[in-house]
Length: 226
Image 1 (tube, rainbow, N blue to C red):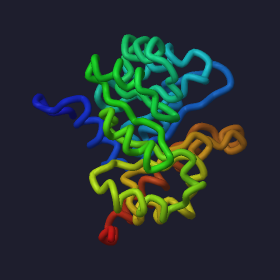
Image 2 (image 1 turned 90 degrees about the horizontal axis):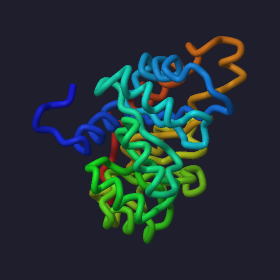
Image 3 (image 1 turned 45 degrees about the horizontal axis):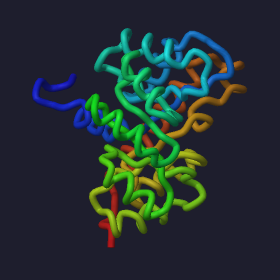
Image 4 (image 1 turned 180 degrees about the vertical axis):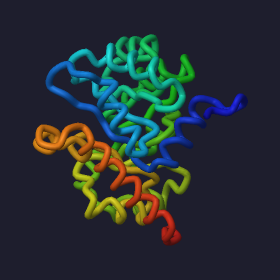
């Protein structure tokens, strides 16, 4: 539950770090978005993302935000322009997520006091995201740099909150956390449509829960960054 004196940015960062996962809903057609969100919540996620490439994304964000309130915060992913960012905020979105540093989107979100998870990859992009006020920096594609790349970034930006996305698996998630990430993210990482077809949405719950456990265990033994 969000404390009375806690800003939305502080609460979003806390909830993301506590769960250690930011799973994304990315569908090719409209569906029961609350059911997908519930599956992720049941697995332990406390902040989820709906990508704007998903049909009916604004409708989904509004429904999830209204249904769960502060118990499950809904972010909008792949926000590329300030007009879209404003619509997300008006539909109840709690976080704006970019695939790269987009200055006018970060500025717009800042005017509404809504936190931004800015996508970045290079050290310059990470620095620009931090300088613009991004709450967290989503390193994309995470698998390209690999876990040790998180350590390289943390060595020069020790205060940055890094969330690698793209190519994060149960086999490498712990390494990303031990190397300096505070959470992991992804869409295909958490939504295997073949499994969903065979096992239902409970497969999402199990996958999210697996990552929550992996991240929590990895955080018990995080070495000091050089």
